[in-house]
Structures are given as structure tokens and as C-alpha cells.
Image (cartoon, rainbow, N blue to C red; front, side):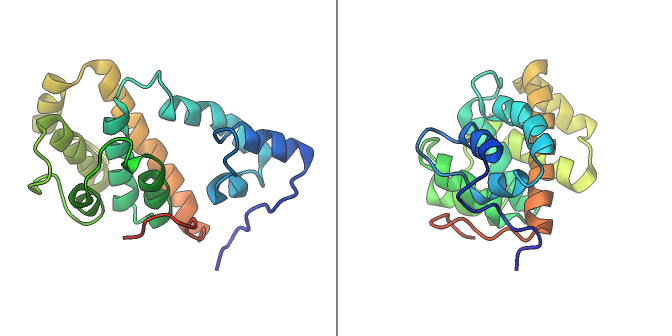
Length: 182
């Protein structure tokens, strides 16, 4: 049972305008955004950062971004946001069924991960989730594979999706229709 209800159409003018700017044209707003829109000042403040994290200025590739997001959401136990991202981006970034399963239930050592950079990203997400830090040995390997802007994007992307996962889980947000499940 949701703890914070999502807005339902018809939306008030200000909420409708905010929600329209958060989704691709013609795509109805997802439940997470409709929940956030219950606090429009917060939603407006978050919108700019969220656009950066999902936009072209992020230094990680779209596939790298999605690996970080999907693994973060899975490690946070947020089936809602994991499902939204796999539904919206999984095919676009070429996630195989095995990789989808691994992101939710496996780990970076699973045989489906053949690219060292991808394994490093997953290791980093796991370390940040487990230890709230990245140890020196892993950091050295990351720094050899990613420049500083990409490392900063990795850290903040993982943290951002921890926050999103915490909000969706604690609010008991219902799963999106059609989104994959674990």
C-alpha cells in the first residue's frame, strides 16, 4: 500500500507543466514523478540534476550510466526504479537477459560481464553500497580506466539513485505497469 499517493490526472496547471517537462513528449509521467510532484518546490530543484544525470552532458556512456543505475537500484532493493530503467533503457543499451539477472541478483564476477570497465563500475557500486566508500585498490583500478570527470559522475550518479531508491521504497511506490520484475 503506497504511503504517499501519486498525483492522478487531471493535474493542476503547475503540476501538469512540471510533469510534462520530466518525460519525453507524449509519454505519461511515471509514478515516481507524480509522487515527487506532491512537493513542487522539491521537484523543481531536483529536475535540473535529474536531467544532468540522464542527459548527454554526463561523461559516462548511456550503457555505463544504466549499469550504475540498475545495479544501485538493485542493491538498494528498489524493484520499482530498477524496473523503470530496464524497461526504458535496457534494450537501448543492449542488456542481455543474463546481464539483467546479474544486475539484480548476481555480481561483477558473473560470466556475463566480459568488459573490464563494466565490471569495475559494478564493483564500485557494490563498494559504495556496502562500505559508503571505495578502497584504494579498487580506486586505483577505476582511475586507470576512467578519467576524473567520469569518476565524479560515477560517484554522484550512484548517490543520486540511492536517494531515488530510498524515496521509492520508503513511500511504497507501486511498480510501473509493464516494467520488468525481479
